[in-house]
Length: 419
Image (cartoon, rainbow, N blue to C red):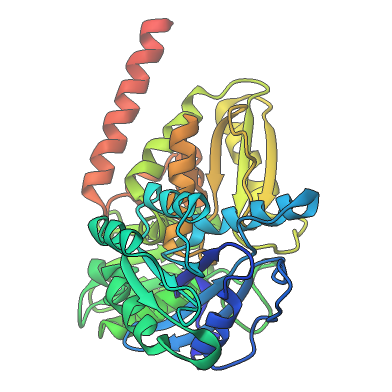
């Protein structure tokens, strides 16, 4: 069953190093399967290889085997670029060496340190070329866990498993809640789930399923309705629910049908908190106030779905924002793991709820946007802001709501000052 756990909920363990140091052999030994092709020829691994498995007590993890960071030639440079992109979604980095610890290994370590990613150093093939005492002393001073292996004969693999367990970020031992903390044990949440063209046939989308599971794990109650049945469902309850959560596309109707005293938010806003930083993305939505004719806006989608006629990211959000600002904007859409290398031409990045990403990748996207000086927000936040109901949708998060109100007031003063 662990194979069915979504990638976004797995600890992402990246295997990095030069060519032919034994990264693929270590992955095969860890998983006890021939996951990656092993050869004496350098450069056997090209695109990153993903292998999900169960690693107790952490639970589901995802190993990512990468191409050698020292690859050569035009194709090799493309492989190195692919390898470097894996940093952005790595929760724990395993740097593999076959003896020396030189500029390539140190470059990987620095890239991981810059992203505050824990590191385990693995010296493979120790039966041939053990690491120097100077290298071991330096890594010890830097607080890097060191493991010695000989992957082809299975030596040191159990020690590597333990090092990964010991080095894993604490949040993977105790997963943060999606919404249970806002509801409480023995209390009710009402989830509004539209069944429209974007609803997958015969099932619910991932954020809805995960929210239901989160409530059940917390011994809370859950009532699931379509938007047209919300008012009747609420009228039929003996006491009001602790929270109403809606798909962002039904925000206006749900806001109208939910009594003012009942807290209301959206799945997308909940996932902005779960996967990234709700405060940062709420501050980012205020950039909508300054958008002008022709400004470029990047819409980033985590999954590569097939767009439909009235697609949320390509049609609805651009329409709502343009109606709100009263100007024609230039929207650019990207999918998957790759962001444009140069974000400087964009005035705003709007991200989906990132249910298919792990939290590390989303936090790195926030970091990249911050370094580029480009505000970033998410679907639910920008929809609610454009429809004039974000203040209410932030009610369950009073600290963030206070910041949003202050930001709106400041934007209002700025407009008055320049008017």
